[in-house]
Length: 398
Image (cartoon, rainbow, N blue to C red; front, side, top):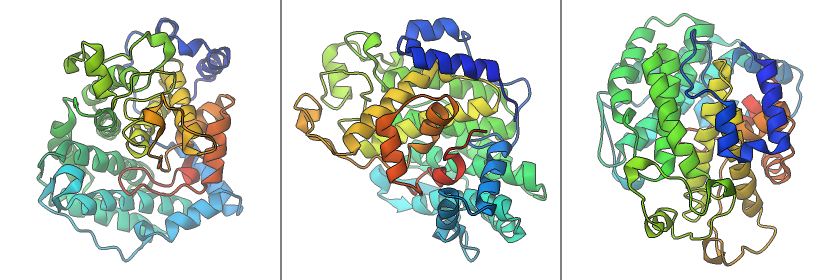
């Protein structure tokens, strides 16, 4: 993995000094546009080879929390070598996956393919690599389309996991005759559903940016990668509020949220804006967690690709994690100004990646996020697109 120690050091200093709370300062310290790397790094979606090697050494030594996290993945249904793939030509997903015609099957087979790829690398047991290949081959030979209202989100969730598996298998295992067909599946079935983004709740488009970025890396397609980053640049500031944004949150221009009333409605009725609040905080913490997770995943993949976006977006991620973690912990009454005095908790296993990046690598104190993260280890899967992040990212300095 290529590293940029001077850039990371500068990011650390900026975060400690608090300068990243100002978008103007962040923008002045960042390039006008983050393009795809000149040469893609593999494996380079979500987790790097250096990170995998760190985890492998910890598991071999029986160290914690990695060994418990490894056993959690290995003993899960996703890690079962007897798993049978369940591909469909057309996956139809309505609101909240109703109807659910292949929705759960696709998402979980994608997570299983990633789980098996991880288990192969950590154990050396080729049966896991072959199972991962079997799952990816079954879907690439079958799927043709996604339909119904949740098609864009379903596509994004599944396509967030597929490239993670494919990167490990193609670039570390290597013996995958149908990798070209899998690449064609990603390009022809998944990309068209996501490439124009979404004006639905922010977690939709953030999941799309994660999936498109991962596909761009695997396909080594700079156009797809750059499109993902362009969507991300608009959506992240519109999803996480900082006081320096002004009296009202930033917005995505295409949504035409041009009055306070429209913005408050889009922010689930929340009219008091404080640093760390997200567009979906007052909807529920579960959907908020989806958005925060994708924010962290895009930053990590970009870092692996040699492009440090933490100076630009790290403060929003830090504040979002800290704010949601504070209220998720349920140690104090929720004030009346926040979501009418009631929040719907259930943040999910989504804090490890951002916490590791900002705390372990950059040395930033994150007391609420730290307490929540450590109390819930090992973090498992949300059964949608997040899996085994204590295993891959806990205290991982690589």
